Length: 145
Image (cartoon, rainbow, N blue to C red; front, side, top):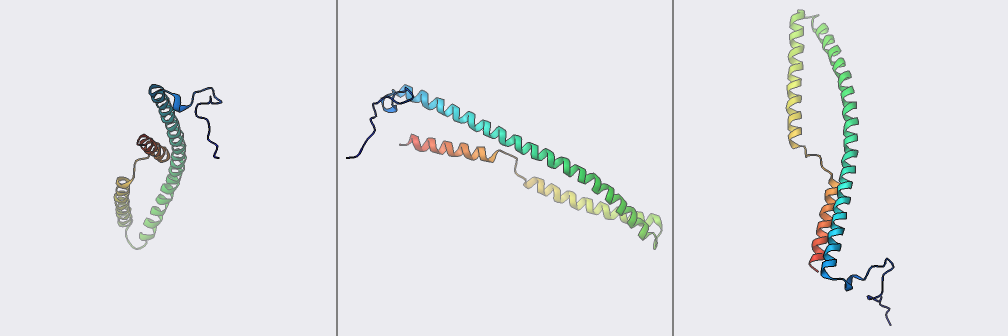
């Protein structure tokens, strides 16, 4: 013979079994659980965004430092190129050629950067959003039973 739990017996937490509760109590319980779930998902999103923000800040600072040193190196390289070209041409022509080349490179990089920014997705707490979607799907499935 199969053992079935007694649905009318008191639960260890002192609460009545769900089958013995009124519709109003069940709705209140579901509302409380949904509120708790939403609060938990919001806390998860907050923690996730804080971690992403810290990474963005550190990465941005490191990239800024690299940019400063890269700019100094580029200035030295430009001076070297002007000096090398001035062996064959007047200094003013050498400076003009190097300036034009640098301007062309800057324009190409600016266009490529703008294209990348247009394709970038907005930062969002992806795990929290996936969790909320899964929770909503579970609630819908439970409601249809």
